[in-house]
Image 1 (tube, rainbow, N blue to C red):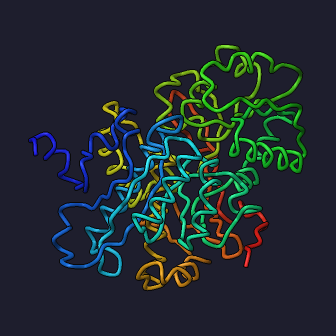
Image 2: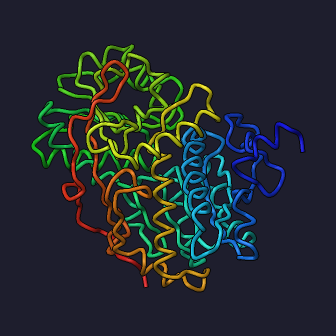
Length: 432
């Protein structure tokens, strides 16, 4: 092995021929070539002797429209698994991660999930980034009777009308965010126009905010859907006009950068109050948004700041580790986003469930489901974001939310909404 490759594998050893740089670097060609690769932290391999590893599958967009977020999501998983294995594994067994690039395409994602289940024989799955891919893959986990811990996807229906007993979501969803944010939005202005990414997540999130803004006494005067991956949004944004108070955006990744910059250039963010889903202004987007995002008011489950309730030793450890790892895939040194956080905590939630159920493998899937239902997670090294609970009735977690603005390119927390004030009635009915 070349010296550079040895350096690249000091933290992680990958079975197969994929180096660390090729796996999580920003080159899309290498990411697109990735099939399913097994990972286990090398320094801890010998310590487990002949113990059989747990195979944890993860489907992530390492190429295509969701690639930037998928790669930071994978960093969060790596952080958790490295820490778990360093601490003796789960039930005395190491974690081995099998990574599949869904290429940001539902058909590819479903096909690769089927391969992980049928050929790689994964025990559980932790992952899923784009909601349309999560929706395509959830029935596959149900058919195979394998637990699926969703780590990013936010589409409302995943834990409502399309829920199933094998899938869990350990982070928030649009109705909870909307319940927390809508009263503040209506204080800012009564009349709102919603611009959104026109696919499953954007559509369901738009519906959730429209409903809650109306319940809080506001009005939706119009909506504008923009296709995912639209490089020039001016044709859509230039049609937004009229007598209303605020423009609310629902976008993520590169689309978040695009809408932030182009809405500013068109004068929309000066003419109207400018607010939206925190994915628009993730830490990884801030450099490309520059001062054009100043004044934006958002909501997010996670902010990479050491202030207020987030000024804890556990969060500092998480933040410091994430910064080092992210700099290895992006020399500009971005701060961790919510995708790092939610994947890190999703893996730790799975660990707790596996320990509580004494999980051995797929034969214990029912025991694992029972252990995860109603699981309470306490703030600390495993869950630096804060306390959370995984509701039994619909496998949806409830967590605290942060309402913030951006001033001089930095986050300022305006309000911390406790998880109890984000609750939304369950709408799930599991099939027999």
